[in-house]
Length: 142
Image (cartoon, rainbow, N blue to C red):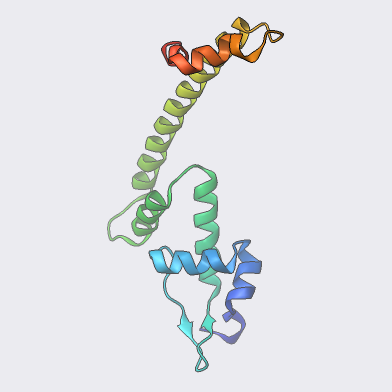
C-alpha cells in the first residue's frame, strides 16, 4: 500500500460520508474487510475502502439490504460471475419495489376512504376513523 493511500478511520469516514461507527459495523459484519493496523493499533485503510463504502452506500440508496449488498460484493470477486448476475439481482429488486408500491397504493386508498368518512367536527368517541381502526374495518378496505 502506498503512503498516499493510507488513511485512518476518521479520514475514511470523511471521504466516504459514512460515520466511523458505521465503518466499524461494516467490518464486524464482513461488508468491509478488516484493515491493516499500525504498530500502535490504528486502523489503516486504502482508497479501495472508499470505493467499497461508496458501493455499499449507493446500493442502500437503491433499496438493497445489507444482506443483498453482501451478495453483490461477493459476486464482484466470484470467479465466472458476469454483469448478468448483478443485473438479475437488480431485476429482483425492481420486482420487490413494484410490490411495495402496490402495497403502499392500497394503503393510501384505504386511508383516503377512511378519511372521507370522517366529518372531522364530531367528538372523538363518534369518530368513524377511530371506530374503523378499532374494529379492523380499515384492514378490509385494502
